[in-house]
Amino acid sequence: MATNPPKRQAPKPEKSVIQWLLDSDPSIRWQVMRDLIGAPADEVAAERARVATEGVGARLLALQGADGSWGGAAWNRGWDSTMHVLMLLRDMGLDPVSDQARRAVGLVRDRVTWQGWAAYDGNPFFAGEVEPCINGQVGAVGAYFGQDVVVGEANRGIVNRLLAEQLPDGGWNCEAANGSTRSSFNTTICVLEALLEHERAVGGSPVVTEARLRGEEYLLERRLFRRRSTGEVIERDRKGDATWLRFAFPTWWHYDVLRGLEYLRSAGVTPDERVAEAIELVASKRDGDGRWPLETRYPGVMPVEIDEGEGRPSRWNTLRALRVLAWYSAQG
Image (cartoon, rainbow, N blue to C red; front, top):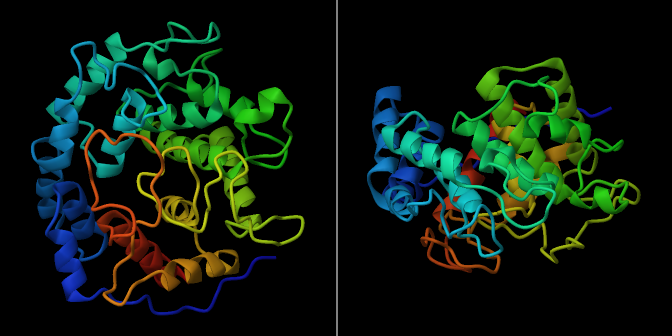
């Protein structure tokens, strides 16, 4: 049985690190204000509103085509498609009820369709396609931006499809259609984020909550980066050759330890000893200035640059690492 780890003090961010984080884009500033310095709610809301009109968020919104898409596609391998930009805007906290978000998402809903295989050709964007890793990301942005559907409507909704695709070990795998019976960390984290956003959007239901908790256990039983069968560290992802011990942002469909911990924090999971080693890994990557680097960057063309490059201190990784450590300390 898992036990709670001894409570420990999270490393207190240096004032210079907090100032470095605040001296940046509104998409980072409002999250620092909310999660790290406890600013008043009205000040946080005012800063969040600027995501739609200033900086990276505004630049991403301006790139939307007249056809409602980004990059001319619902999805592509270059990270500048409609799905990828909406994922970035969700990460940045674009307020879904803002006029700018409503207009952009409305264009996606009304004009963007999936093209390619016959199995999904012509599907409206928020209906998704066939792979659970992609549908997890579409489901997450759909729920976040108010495009979710009610669970239980026959043959409708990404969430219903994802629920039906959960494997016996508790996770999900895009290769299940090809006969795989073991789950994938990559696919599982994408689906978990979608189920959590869905619950936030329309309220929890027993079937969705049960599926999500089983998925969480899939990660926790493996201590976020070890094989359940042998306990050995999973050094590299078999499909994408990514290493889960190196932290990227954006992560796209890739799993890594920091993304796993961020999900658990966001879901309000009480940490136990199964996350302790992952937390130690995160803490070990803090540099002498109290910052975390962008350790890896996946191939593709970013629609807008959001960090200073691979190997350089990363505001996004620093923000995410600091709040994960604070979550662990507060609930340990």
